Length: 134
Image 1 (cartoon, one colour):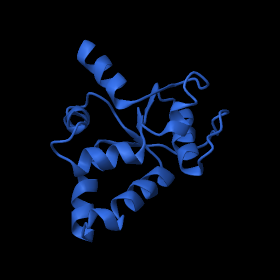
Image 2 (cartoon, helix red, strand yellow):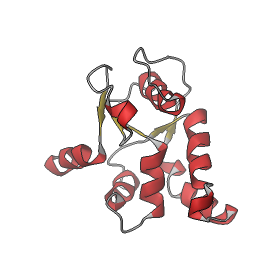
Image 3 (spheres, one colour):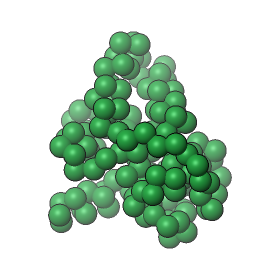
Image 4 (cartoon, helix red, strand yellow):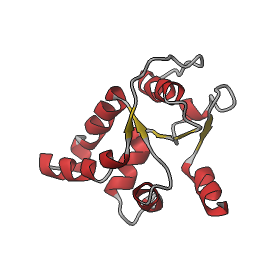
């Protein structure tokens, strides 16, 4: 399972938001998020955005609520489908290398590639329906 950095940041930052269920989901081992060096850096960069006004300690605490549940993957394969956004490509390559079944995103460039990869690309609402159905 691959979550893009915007999904993870939103989940971590807004404890009562629409994606709050995801935190409990990965903490209960309902899924194992995959992460690479590049996507970890992207998440760190996203959390450091001035709009969130997080201290370094705040960012460390948030990352501690996610990273221990992740499986680190070395990206060794490039996804054949190319994203128009370089940041998005890193999530495609991670999903390809990690043999993920699903990439969860709200990014339009990534969602536009749905059906063009060996893994599914879907928004969080679609994944929530799958989780609820068991």
